[in-house]
Image (cartoon, rainbow, N blue to C red; front, side, top):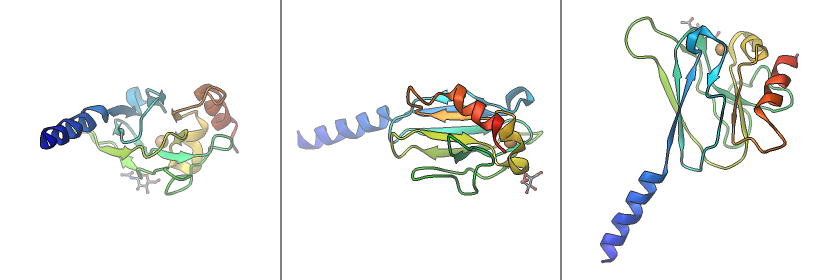
Length: 142
Ligand SMILES: *[C@@H]1O[C@H](CO)[C@@H](O)[C@H](O)[C@H]1NC(C)=O
Ligand SMILES: [Cu+2]
C-alpha cells in the first residue's frame, strides 16, 4: 500500500512537469514563439533554434539589451549561442524553471542588436509587467 502510494506520487510528479517548446528565429524572424508563457516550478522550456545564430538568455525588464553572458538573476539561464543547421534536426537547448519569479529572456547576439529588434520572451510575467512593455524596453535599450 505504502509502496503503491509512492509510485502514484512519482507518476503524478512526472505528469505535472510540462515541457514548453519555444522556437527561436522561425521564418527567419528575430523572435521567440510563443513570446510569453506561464511555467510551473520543475517545468522545462526547450528552445529550438531554427535560423541564424541566437541565444536565449535572461536579462532585466528595464534595460534588457544585451543580456549578460550567463544570464541575469537567481533562477536565470543562458543557453549560449546555437547556430542553425541546414541539414538534420534543429539544435535544441532545454532549461528547467526553478521558481515562479518572472524571467525576461532575449538574445545576446551582436552586442544586443537582435535584442533591440524586439527579440523577447517573457516567462511568468506579472500583470503589471507585460511582454509588450518588455519588448518596448528592449527596442528602446541603448
Ligand atoms: C555564433 O555567434 C557567436 C557569437 O557572436 C560566435 O562566436 C560564433 O562563432 C557564431 N557561430 C557561427 C557558426 O557562426
Ligand atoms: Cu539572436
